[in-house]
Length: 581
Ligand code: BGC
Image 1 (tube, rainbow, N blue to C red):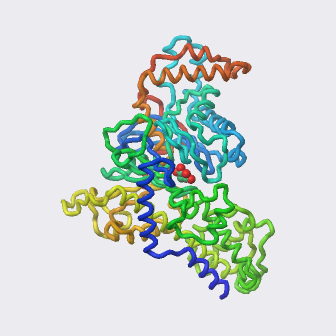
Image 2 (cartoon, protein in one colour; image 1 turned 90 degrees about the horizontal axis):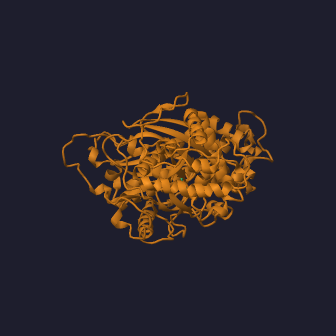
Image 3 (cartoon, protein in one colour; image 1 turned 30 degrees about the vertical axis):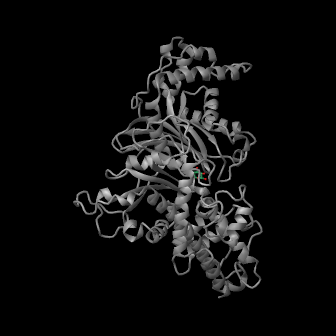
């Protein structure tokens, strides 16, 4: 009993009352506005230079790469123009040592190499043709602009964006730490490595995963409602939304099309309330923060996202285990366990290692409602290195894990609610008008909501996808927020935008390609060739025998890319995806 009472006590530390939900919401809106007015604020509110969302009719073949969590993804996306797309992808884990490499070059050379491997494997004809042309053709017409893949680069870290394909890294998050990269233009870093490998690829757009999610959801979402917000609740957390240009009063350097009157803003809400004015905290959060690579930063993210929830649980369990009077993972209860054997924690248990407890155990704990908690006990054996845990042990883990997950969901809901309030979207109420196009939001009960009253939100990430009830916890916050309430909450439709970062990056690469002026590209190539020349001087025999000057001779009068002219990916991995929700 002592153990369960202690678990309940620890769980209660993660709870917070509804008036704190409201206070957090108010502070969130205040910090958003501050970020729109000036630079160097806690929430960066980064202008993305993307000024509209797609409507599902866009077409073409694009490349997209995604760096932002544990894996690096390379994909090619065929947009069919009817809200569907086909996607071919490969994924490699980022080697741990590259996440903390000495130089940015080490990481970006690795990324470029993966792109080369992908092109050789999945777009061999295109790749070979390019190499042949480069070797043999000496007239400008031989090197045609439409043969260059436009690439959308999803780079999911805070970047100071200075144009659609330019942006300097502000800081690393999610365990990456390569100080040399801070302040550098990440698109240029990637382009340089692609050029060294002589790949037919142009980094056309720099995209945060949340922006990609927003684009992808807009492309695939049902009905005619444009999506307001793209949010990630995965390894990290963040949101990007459509803001009125008139509200963005801080200086913006780059060029953009102002005709829509709106721009997508990357909030970087992971750093909301770094000053800890309103966020709930516990001793476990404080330990996590103190021992992280970035103390005092990403304080909202550290309470919400997958990178941190397993670690919070680990720290809380270790604290409980320290108490001599609380029998967690100790033999006192072996009478309760199936195996009738002694409960032991192996010395190499992940419980004793920072970051070693994967957040997926929280999902398993939440999902297991069986009497004997068999699935959770198996997970505790496998992932916490505890042999023969008792039912009571598992119940204690479940109670604490539940409290951590629920807090994350409630906080996530506040972020969504604050964006809805900031944009005033709930004020457009057509409920009084005809009932045509009436549809239901995911849990709006039986009352049909007219299409034009829906506020559409696209989400992606392991937590929102796999943690049971995450959306319910989000909604519990929405219902108690001033200006939303139970009625407003029903009008908010939350849908999964699967593969958002890939498809979204492709969509932005498409927009960027359309914006390119013919001369831009030629000038860029010329500048690039000077750089390549500098790099090649002194290098021996490039693998394909070509030289940089041969490449120079092939620079054409370019014209904008003709989307949709490439062949479809033809291989088993290619699949049609259903509209994400
Ligand atoms: C990064 C964001 C990103 C989010 C989700 C955060 O750590 O700062 O840029 O969107 O993770 O991947």
